[in-house]
Image (cartoon, rainbow over all chains, first blue to last red; front, side, top):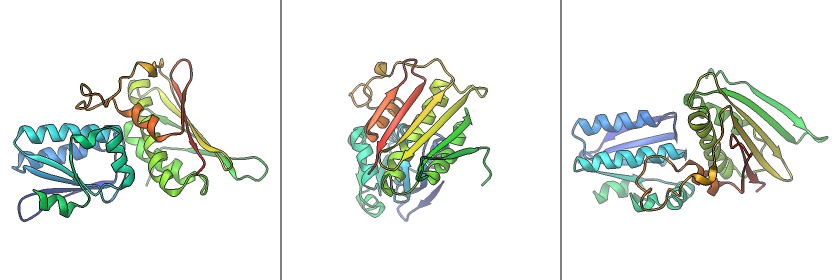
Length: 111
Length: 152
């Protein structure tokens, strides 16, 4: 499990989640995104194309990060959810809190 | 990968197709990912679809372990979590997760999808489990949960 951070030409920070986002590693993701926010990043895309599963703590950290990024005038968007992960967001109604696109490219284009 | 986890594997029945897995882990959230992978890797093929093993089985197991460690055992390193999985080809995969705590009342957990709870960071675990399993049962004390994923 790991997280990769990259910045595109427009300065949008793309964070890839490889494996799972759960209680054991959510703090690592949170710190990486907060460091990027501290460093001036305001637009974030979390890419779940390579993610197997997310637990409720993982969902919670996304809610928390979204709040903090918005407080700084930024935005956090989600992309690449497979059908099961999309269902997870829908049944918890978190799909109403986040802007979700099929691919990271769509999320980048929409910023 | 070194892991302090020791998995017990027992073949059940005459054909030996059914399997019982047992695992005990310390109250350490960092162990959950390895515990989940270890149990998923030893769950026999063909009972649950690969997709349900990848998502439903792993998600609900991770949730149940996190609940047991965080709420059940209160993170006390001297307390343990006991996991038993019975994978029965003709029937279901059942997962029992027991903690050493005092239990809780699952009926007292509020619905996390209501407007007043939607923005909360925590409180979705039981809700997620309930939606990803075919049956969810607790013992009377509330420190043992049984998750049933029917074959298919």
